[in-house]
Length: 373
Image 1 (tube, rainbow, N blue to C red):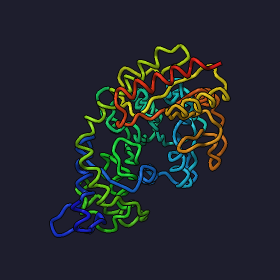
Image 2 (spheres, rainbow, N blue to C red):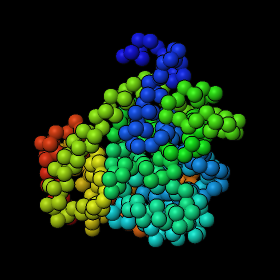
Image 3 (cartoon, helix red, strand yellow):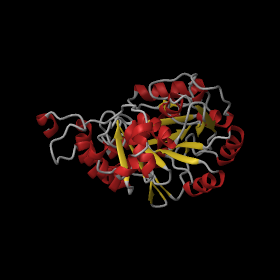
């Protein structure tokens, strides 16, 4: 309410010796993740595009990314005039390392934008080893893994730069927004200028030294995409409770997973032992069921109040789309991914669900599988 009272919504509109809400959020989020630098921006998609520019992606550069992700990921690549190169996924919804090596050879790409889609984290030790061996710059999309870990290390600490979303359905909610973190001073100085700091970068707290802006302030274009103080003020109290929220999500995930696991018609995702996931959504398979059968199943569940999304639909619906519906990128054949997605269903798990709600919802899903042909 203080921001609304004083009316200083713009992040650089501050009084003498005042730190803006956005600068404070950046410092607090950097401390939470365990990095030196953080930048708050207008959206998660903007954070991805800004990160790609800051690492040096240029028009027509090939950029590797998962074939299973949401549209803002290839969209961020395409927005730079770069070329998304789609990599197959495994049955466990993780990037396929064999196909990644193959696509590196074929595309000669120097960049991988890894999307931890729906909160599934691949073997980051193996991925870092691969990237180091193949001299690949790693950019992490952590929109669905804020608060998650790999072998005890926070998601977002493995890439040269990592991006998070604070859109309504993410782990912190400001309606729209994004965060970008890195330990690289040159990269972050470019990102801050790119975000539209003008020459006011000294008003950031979680920033590189002033000397690190020597070149970027002249050579990095202003691609305005700042976060405002109102959204930052909404996020700061939520960040303090993020760890508790992650625990609550996992309780709900556990209830739903245990009930779904009792059905012999449902296939569950096997999660790596080193993955500290945040169960804000759940995915499962209806193997052997036709597209028409899955459409009927989704409709029956919807009529009973259970909202499911099917990633195998060739037509995009709402936020859900399959890679071959992204007509703005070059057509690419990912048969294993298409097969995997053909029977994959997805459900958000809002914290507004009680544990009893989760039991009921999972029971409805299991009951409806009994009606499948």
